[in-house]
Length: 182
Image (cartoon, rainbow, N blue to C red; front, side, top):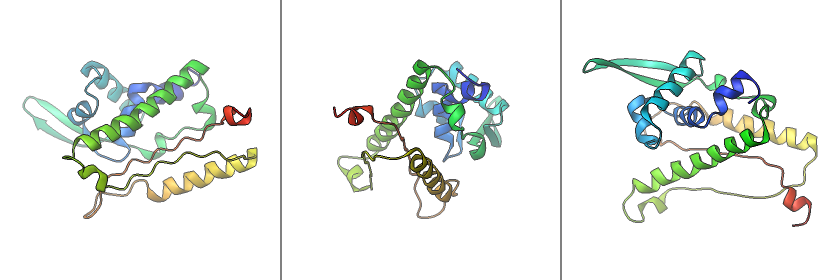
């Protein structure tokens, strides 16, 4: 993978930890519940690496039994990558990153639907959209800036009465199939 920062942030387990901590303060135990398929040692290693790099921070510590249980959160400005960092690896590494991103969307949705009885989950507001637009390079840059501004407007809002966490996932991907008329 390209840069050291890209290697750090684009690793599938570390990326999932950062995504999970981007809107929530969680303990390692909480993260293990969210990612039960990740071996505990791998999760602890990912948390340590992200913490050492300043991408996540400890917000509190509490003694539980004989160990300290730390609560973490993402440091928003440290978990955002530039275009160059995001695409600094090989094609295979980039595709693995996109797969991890897609898997995160599915696992978030699965957890949400699984915590509601029967059809209760249907009462929530979901929004999924796919579309194709023909854009110039300048318009793609404008789109990226506008999406960044929308994220900035809504990210880092604290937990308050009447609020619930919402996962916002956006991917802007060139669509060669449409370009070729497929």
